Length: 385
Ligand SMILES: Cc1ncc(COP(=O)(O)O)c(C=O)c1O
Image 1 (cartoon, protein in one colour):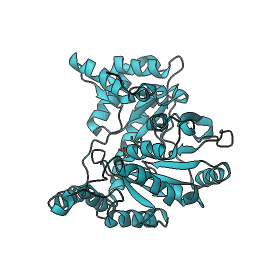
Image 2: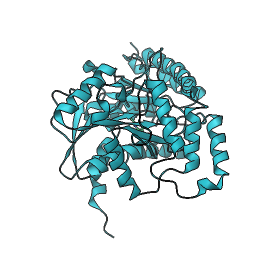
Image 3: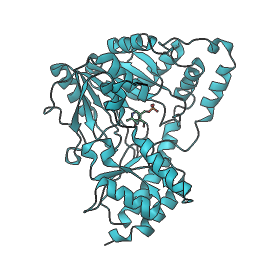
Image 4: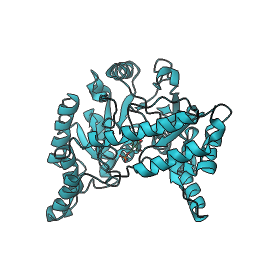
């Protein structure tokens, strides 16, 4: 058999390798705690589950959905943007469902990039910012996110490109951006031409009273781009594959055009559940943010005790920590696995500028996180002063 070369152009998905390592140790009877993957451990809020069950019993949801989404879904998204961000969206033309943010990221790339185009992507960054463009035959130019710049890209030093991915609150660094940064990005894109795709997977998971803005709050943002929003993390809905693209009507339409040729949209019962998330469970992400804030403090304390220099994030369920002197991302992740049987993600897996960091995910139950923290404190004595 012969297969398409485009698949060889992207590395195996990051977590495939992590999962292999965990399985290896578990087969050897070792109890491994994984802080590798960001998949919420707690259940989806009950009103969302109820709405799905109700809608699934209604035979009208059993037929093909439309790629555009139901009127109710698009209206609920527009209401959410008005109330949460003060952003006005035309629910007819400026909103469309995605089957999770990941699908949105990859297919927006396919809808906007030609072979030979350049996509600008954050480094470190979420892996589909690379695979989407690569599958489109485009080149990826990485924009380093340096700690001394607050993990924001240097747009003035960036080359021309057809597409710019940004993502705040940021995975993996946990960094946040204010509306000023989004305004600069929108102005920059207006001058330089690229379509901006802001990947907003984490705006509802924020701590210490901080409220994250939407890219669409920036003046002129809708003229230059879109925001991809995901229900996965705020509402514990990673399994449901639910989110949307909102903003520039032409980008929304091109994405729709592409998708009508690939699939037939989001199950209408899932759309009803998404409406329930945005209405009946509107405040649920606040409860989750409190859980993650507590866990963040627990991890900060454990890392400080082993002598790491940490700055706790004010958003996202991730902790991005600099590895100690003398270690690389990989050697420190290896050390934590060997000595504490805890899996952390090596930062370089998110791009070359992630070297020197590891990412710990807070999406494990409190008792396991507590146990992981205790193991790290007890076993990594080498780092203690
Ligand atoms: C930056 C970022 N974007 C998008 C997603 C995708 O989320 P989903 O496809 O579950 O909506 C994730 C998930 O980890 C993420 O970290």
